[in-house]
Image (cartoon, rainbow, N blue to C red; front, side, top):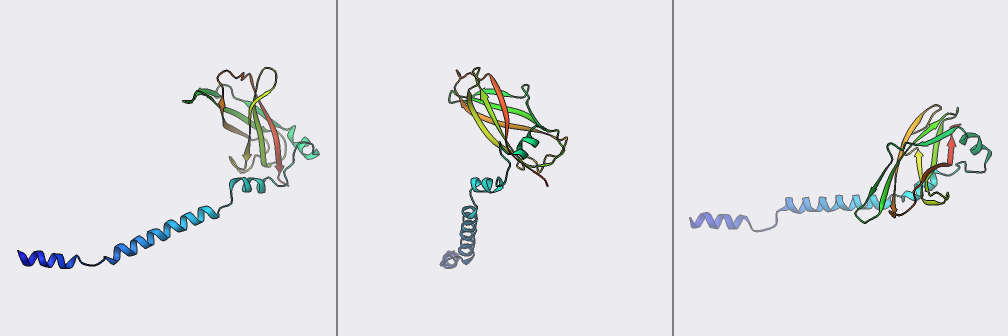
Length: 171
């Protein structure tokens, strides 16, 4: 029995090369993933680059295309719910319809909750096209859902207003 124990203890001396190689490969993979994440440009930079050359309010192209975009709120699907912090979150659902004859490559809209005096309580800009769908063609509809949070329960949330703030059409 003593010889059995002596042989076993002799085999356990030293470092197992398989574990060392596995640990080094694991550390190298984690470092590569972290490096790839940090080399990605920030989301704001990508959004700003995407929005270059978009038609804004005041340009004739904007006015010509905007009149053919209809945005309506689906009040049956819009929900107000209290949060655990005593605030109110609104999940607002709208429908965007392109009744014009141009395909939209970029569509940025603003959603604002307004009070009875027509003052903005909270608002948010969202990029609908191309983030939700690639393009919005003539006669097509898209449902848009966004969350506005941080309302005080006493806030006057009388109405919801949608507005196109930027667009780009396919040439």
